[in-house]
Image (cartoon, rainbow, N blue to C red):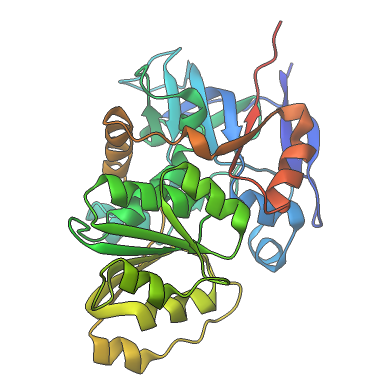
Length: 348
Ligand SMILES: [Zn+2]
């Protein structure tokens, strides 16, 4: 007899998701069954929901989606040590092979055989999720708000990007005020940057950044060069974090960097982006592509920064029960949202 659970499924190729009854997964050797408490909707989930060209190319339905979550360990599969039932956990969404060169060197974020939770295997928008024990991250301390743990995956991207370069005493430009851009800017500010400026064209998102205490600039309206002069920035930004996937933002970065500046790229571009490579050469810029997060050093830093006073709760804008998932995706698609949380608990 199979036990059933609710899950948000992409049942076939095309737009939308369906709330379906599916089998509760069985933890295999070395795996853990997690009872999901809360999830957060990521931009990736919206691509899958909308069924855009990226989803068409990368998703094979039927698939339970979602990879940002907090839950508790419901059951340990055979052979699992060091974890126990009832522990509050989240998990690293990249299942890596463990034997390729990068895995062996401790750089799992660059594994060439990586499999993504909620992208290539069953995801977390469900009442239960099965995950290799190696990927489970216990987060039991009371100072970690549960709603924030729900989006630790995204916070991990922000942290990994913000920690690419030393920002102490530096002027930092963050292009793109989505939740990850806002979190990355807040991390740079907390970690000793002299000035952090976050840019976007969307006033709702810029206001969200301002709620987080950030200096936010609408580059559709205000001149970045003039703002730099007012901020006593004479030679340009020292560090830039590109979080928008916009070609215009890359041009803005390259033209406003000081010689020898460092650029981290996290935002995904819809198409090939044109960039003036000569400008990168003559300015001596460093460009670093960023994917995922360090396993598992980034997770430790994330919890530690929150313990140290980094408050991410202002970027949560919507909360729904999972049965109202359509409202959550509508909020994400409206462009007027920060993090959207879905609650998977059913009160008895
Ligand atoms: Zn690998």
